[in-house]
Structures are given as structure tokens and as C-alpha cells.
Image (cartoon, rainbow, N blue to C red; front, side, top):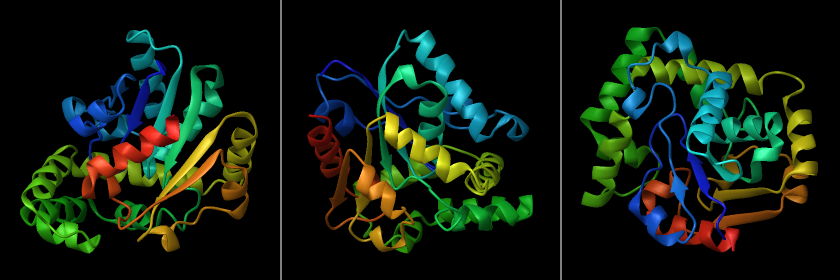
Length: 244
């Protein structure tokens, strides 16, 4: 019960939420800023990719004296979590992949962002920021004051340069022919839990072997890909049950 939980955000957003801290007690919960996000917003985009995030996360855990953790990664963050666990297996108690990217099919939106000219990516992100309720609606989420406040926080958490750098990196990583084989090795050596939203399950390209070999497979009802924004408390309860 005392193994900390480290949460790794996806392409957009931040997983630092009081519901996670409160619900997962007595476990400590950390959602460190990745390169290009939050307090590290101004990191040069040329220094931002998935490999750099893995090493950045390693430095953070060492600085916090956290030698052994559960890693939870959402979407692109799931790729960071998986590759960290492969590189530093002795530091990882388990991986929780919340619709983490397995294939280029999963990374279709990232691929679209990766192909954009910088000015197009800037305009895309600014458009989301200008109308967060429309951004939520694209994911099938009905806006209310709490969700809008959280959406505003997520959309302000990174710039377009970071968005594109991470998008290009996840396309490159998941496009390598050996990527799935590497993940399959991880499943054989480390507990990997899979979490998916009921509304987004059909679009998640998780291989059959991953579902079969996972330590657990959880479908959260009535939510989609942005489940931790849509229902933070329900998401936190599900993760608490999974870890317990």
C-alpha cells in the first residue's frame, strides 16, 4: 500500500488532481511536469520527445528518492510509461496503461498534428483554448463548470511546439516494427493493467494478446478517452480498486 503512484499525462493535459490524491491514500500520488509541460512549458521543442521524457522521469524519481513506483500513463503517456518500464524494470511495480498507444492507428490524431505546419498547430491549440466547451464536445463530454475549469487547465498546460514534438515522437516510436514485440516482453515480466473508457473502447487498437496477458482489464462505464477529466472521482476510485 505504500508504493507511490506516478501519473504521466497524455499529449494534452495534466493528471495532477485532488481527487486522485484523496482517493488513492495512503499511497502518495505524483503527477510530475514532463518536458514542455506546466512549469517546464518553455523547454525547447527540439529537446522534447518520448526518450527524453523517460530520462526526465528517471531523474525526477531519483531526486524524490522514489526507487519503486506504479506508473500510470494516459494515451501518449502510456508509451512513456511502457518504455520507462522496459528500460528500468527494477523501478516499476506495475504499469497502468489508460488507453496507451499501441499502434499508429491509436496515434492517428498525433499523426495529424505531427504533419501540420507550426502555424497550423498554434491555430489548432488556440482554437481549443478559445472554446473549451467545443473541445470537450468533440470527445462526447458535456461541459459543466468543473469540467470547463479542468479543460482550461489542460489546454494551457503545454504549447503547440510541445504538442507537435510529442506527436512526432509517438508516431516514430509506435511505427517501429519491433515496438509491439518489445511491449509483449514487458507484459511477460511486469504486471500491466489496461484501462479503457466504455465510449472509446471500440477505437482503442489494443492487440488481443495484450488483453489476454494483462494483469487486469478495466472498462470504465459511461466515459471516453478523457475519462479522468470527464469523471475524476470515478476514475480515481477505479484506479484505487485496481491497485488494491
